[in-house]
Length: 244
Ligand SMILES: Nc1ncnc2c1ncn2[C@@H]1O[C@H](COP(=O)(O)OP(=O)(O)OP(=O)(O)O)[C@@H](O)[C@H]1O
Image: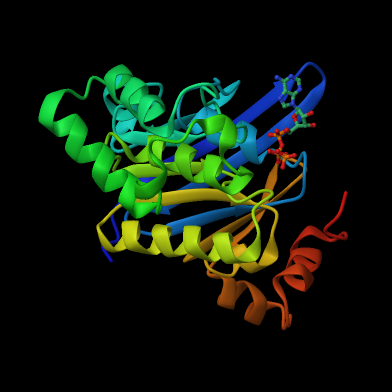
């Protein structure tokens, strides 16, 4: 693994009205790692990833992604983003959805065919491409959304709670896909509130009430405070229970 940074967040703050949602966030994410952002519902994970990709502007501070100060169109082209809710056309087949989004990304001809095949294979959807999305299970829809985020061969893949509502077997499959992508050199940022997923990340940022309360490997986070579990560690660093 190289030690070059792919994301640098400096003194980022954001409020919605009177509510302070991100408080002085400083964070560096290294290239080639799976970085997890762990925090309870409402802690600011989605807001932080949205500011990362330029979908939302911070009130203060600066963000650099792939050596570009955000928001930056060139950097955005190298990022694959999967939002929390699936944005799929239900009446279209998986292939038609993929074709539509590939065209939107400006991928054409032979490259389009190749990219769709490669991405579908990674998420195990090759045999379901001609099925209308309305007939997909929740897990298949999530995998199709991941597939779409992979179409432009992103250097950085950002996934907002990619496995919510997915059973443990499928969740394991999806994490295997992340490992394969990492092997190929893709950097991954994933938000989660699930502890066993957090354990699988190379580095973990714990966020609570808009504050980054600790950043380290899952092992070090536990060892430093003599915790048996990440939940215990979260309690230690956050000074409160994990749940809101
Ligand atoms: N557009 C908005 N306008 C006003 N408040 C917002 C907006 N977006 C988010 N918030 C508030 O900001 C806080 C953080 O929300 P955010 O979605 O970032 O949390 P989260 O950690 O991603 O939560 P979850 O795990 O439930 O998705 C919440 O209190 C939320 O209600």
